[in-house]
Amino acid sequence: MRVLVVDHPLVAHKLTVLRDRNTSSPVFRLLTEELVTLLAYEATREVRVEPVRVETPVETAVGIGLVKPTPLVVPILRAGLGMLEGMTRLVPTAEVGFLGMARNEETLEAITYAERLPEDLTGRQVFVLDPMLATGGTLREAIKFLFKRGAADVTCICLLAAPEGLAALKEELEGKNVTIVLASIDEKLNNKSYIVPGLGDAGDRLYGVVG
Ligand code: URA
Image (cartoon, rainbow, N blue to C red):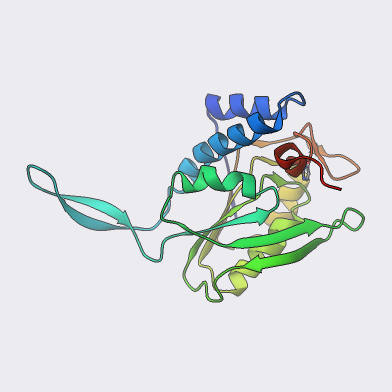
């Protein structure tokens, strides 16, 4: 498993505004999309391509195109949905599948409550979108699920991670073809498993508090 923290002043600036408790939901949503586009630029460096010929107005040129089937993007509902537009802006031909996962706030276990993915992911490159890598439980379950269906490699784009969650994932996924791309590794988890300093509950910040 590889971890890549994208070191760029625009990434750091957008993340700082996201952290601000006074940032409104509409601004939070817009900045999340912009930030994901920047992270996706780095996360897609290894996307599979093949040579293609095109006729320019002057000559034939050899360029590259994305190999089919194109990458599969999987936002983890609910908060990952806020990252989808930022990803598909960069890779508009990607297919999109959905995984609905939530953590039980008492046991912190990940529960899958919805799934809409191809049955067979043999050889597919998969990009998982989940803003907060806290304990790592949700991502671990999602990654295991995708490999079970045959995914060739999994790249997770997250806004933030806690060192505890990254360490737990690393231990479980060492040797697997997994890359985690992040804007920041924060200090720690608090006793409610929130990332500190973090940005709060990403789903609530994106979509408001629902019950
Ligand atoms: N999920 C969030 O939305 N925020 C955290 O800090 C941890 C998990």
